[in-house]
Length: 165
Image (cartoon, rainbow, N blue to C red; front, side, top):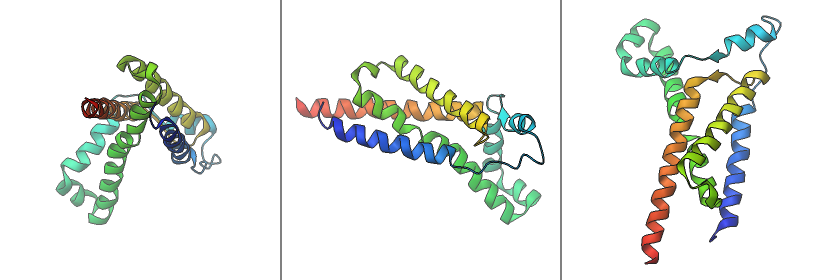
C-alpha cells in the first residue's frame, strides 16, 4: 500500500481531466437538424471504419495533398494523429491506476470488464448528451490504451518486485 494516497490523488485528477476533455464541448445547433437526426449523425457502429479512414490520410499524404490542398491536408493529418494517438494515450492511466490502487483489479479480465464498461458508458453519454460522437473505433482504441497501461502496470510492478529482492 506504499504511496496509495498519491496514486488515488493522481487517479482522481486523471478522472477529472477526462471529464473535462470528454464532455466540455458546445452543444450542436439543433435548429438545423433535430435531436434524433443529430444523434444518428454522431454515431458509427462499423468497426475500424474511422481508424481506416484516418490511417489512409496518414499513408497517402501526396494523394490527399493534391486532392484537398496542402493547408487542408495539414489540418486533416493533425486531426488523424490526434484522434488515433489521443484515443490510445488518454486511456493509458485507466489501465495503470486501478490495479495499482486496488489489488482485486489485478486480473486482466477484471480490468477488461471494468474498462470496457466505463468506455461504453462514456461513449453512450457523449452520444445522448450530444457532447461528442459514439464510435466503435473509439472503444477499440481506448481499450488498446487500457491494455498498454495495464502492461505498464505489470512491468512497473515486476521492476519494483525485483528491486526489493
